[in-house]
Amino acid sequence: MKKKIRNAGIAINSLVQGWEELNLSHEESNMSLNSKETIFHQAFDPLIEALTNTEDILHQTSSPNPKKPKLDFSGDCSTSSDVPSTSGLSGRFNNESHIIEKVRGNDGDDQVTIQYKYKTSKDFIPVFPLKGKPKYLDEWLNRKRKWPPTDVVTDEYNSEFFVVAKPALVEPSKVIDFCLAYNIGEIKLAEAMTQLQKNVILIIKALQKSSLRDYTEIVTTFHWKTVVYWVSENTETQILENRTEDNIHEFLQNVLKYMVDCLCNNYLQHYFVPSNLFVGIHEDKIHDIVLKIVEIQKNLMENLQNFDKGQSTVKVHYDIVSRSKIKEFQEMHSDPGDNVIVESVVTLLRGFVNENKEVVRRALHEVLTEAVPFLIE
Image (tube, rainbow, N blue to C red):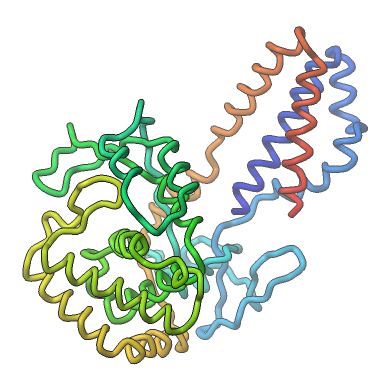
């Protein structure tokens, strides 16, 4: 995150300098850029200088039992001491979702052991916009349902859809396989959920991290969300909108039962189109998962308590990462490609400035007005 903010600071600084060069003669430009007397430089040079200071990505402590990180006024996550790393890496790493407590390595090998409490990840996948509506979407629009509300359904129908290069589940071929992507529609569905629905999904995620942890590669969170959508369609609105213990328990049991039925039939239909999400799953694996879900249905509170017990104990995990991968990570986050973007923006401004300087000045002012408070925050 600090790297992104630092790069944003560099980009804004370069953009302003480019703007100054457009509006000043060469002599005046040099004088202005050297003296730093403009209002922008007086106000924000200290900020940009702070943002562009280089920092290493990893923080290291010599203590075998690291103390709880302290958060100082600048937002840096630091421990009680900084010592040189045997792996040649030191510094700080700050992230709300995970903290690397320690890095250990040996100069004789090509691996570094990274210790952490938990971590998260995100996938960024290139997509192609789909021209027109996907097949069967009209059928989905006219389906009788109790959820989501009519306005959400209409909004979903008018959303943009995409295709993604993704191998098929059966007889995959990377050369020709594509699939439809309803990611915008799924985001809107998630936003339309009531608090009860969100609570049930969180409960299911808790079960996936405890009782169902051995089956998360087969029955994923996406499968569970799809089941929640189907069950919600036939659930009375008064149940979905009233978050009582009884309503949560009833809705959760219905979701578990629907999943068992789909697994027994080896068929879970995609929420938008008639496509089987369970195609290719072996019957033996289905049998094991069904037995586990039935057990959860019978002892729901006991299984949730197992998750709670696991969370109450501080666990430390380890990853083995090669130094070459760490170097690759560092180089990737030091990519000078941002400068190309800045140059492109300045070139674009130069093309428009002669025709309507005031419009460009106003647009640049709006960009800086929104970007700088974000960086400060």
